View (cartoon, rainbow, N blue to C red):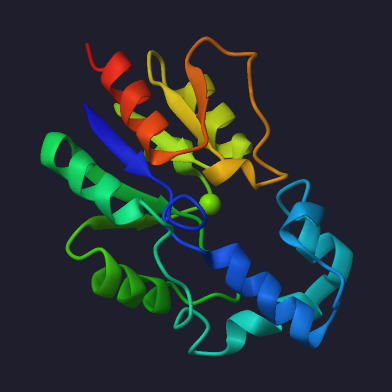
Amino acid sequence: MRIALDLDMTLNTMAYTWIKWLKANIDDNITLSHVRYHGFIRDAYGKVADAYWKDPACYDEITLLDGASDFLAWAQSKYECIIITHTPPGQQSEIKDAWIAKHIGDIKVIHTDQKHRHSQGCMLIDDHPGHIQRHVRHNENCHGIVFNHQGRYGWAHALTCHPRVDTACTYDQLKIIISHWDK
Ligand SMILES: [Mg+2]
C-alpha cells in the first residue's frame, strides 16, 4: 500500500503561521476557529490575504506539527509515502519544495489541486475534506482519512457518509486506522 500525504496542516503548521500574519496585518480578531471551511480566508479578506505568500520567506516560520516527525518515520518505514500538495496560484512551488527538503528530506512531491488524479492505489491523508471525497469517489477501493490535528480545524469536519473515509485527530489515531486497513 502507498500513502499519499497532504503537506499543509496535515504535516506542517501553515495556517497557524498565515493567521499570525493576518492578525498582525489585516484583522486582529481572526483565529483558527473562525476558519470553518477551506477558502474562508480568501473569501473573507480577498487578495490582500495572499500578500503573505509573495514573501520568499513565507515558509521560514512554518514547522512540522507536533508528532509529525515521528509519524513520518513510522509511515516511511512501513509504506511507500509521497506528498501531494495543492500550491495555489501566487504561491511558489519551489519554496515549498525547499521546505520539504529541509524538514522531511527526500520524498516524491506532486503539486496539484486535482489530488485524486495522482492518488490511485494510495491511502490519502488530508485535512481538506474535498480532496478526500474526490479521492474515494474516483479511486475504487481506496481509503481516505480526514486529518484534524487535535480537533482544532473548523474546516475538517467528520465525514461519516462514506465507508472508505475515516477521521483522525492525532498521529496515533492515523497509525491505528492505517494499520486497520492494511490487512
Ligand atoms: Mg492541507
